[in-house]
Length: 284
Image (cartoon, rainbow, N blue to C red; front, side):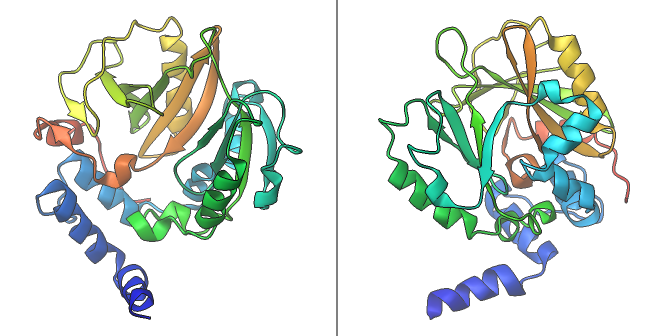
């Protein structure tokens, strides 16, 4: 009873700005200024409250965003979809294909890698997915775009390179329709590291929410990925566009509107404000 009461007060009664300010101070150790936001994280929080559209909800939905991608750049950039379901029992040996897949909820973070369905603990994955389908991710970070997404389970083909490894994840932080920062995520499901670059592929000397990674060779499809990212970002003040490259082909990953929920740490901390200068806010 007490646990339910705490949940009710924490997630349902506290207004978004108050809840966000509390978490902001807790994680970033400085007071959030929503009236005159300066830092990157402050501006992400401002956008949480002031930039809420149906398109944000559609594009935060990892299933429905496929329609947006097909409309904007073409279905050839989509990772092959095996099936989508709201039934956890569909995550079974009978329903899953014989090749590697990735399983993920459409309404929140996280994913499950299945390289061999016969060697995977599908019952454990079912249990975790059952719990995740009950969660409204909005209440954890007050990212409004998640509030009205119908929870589903997506099963996609797992992208693997010639070494049977998941390819690097290129994340393009787009502000006012232009790429301002590129982060390359390596070993996302193991020793997660990020290496940061500008659009000229010059390494940036700071950390954002993860330790510095190793130097990454400039991808030969960089210019095309920048072009795609800027096309996909035109409808938004800020969005992070996630892309992969595999065998000279670009694949779309997802769109993210508030990286790290707007609570991501910077090292050195001043880069929170340096990056924030590049993002120009306006009400929708």
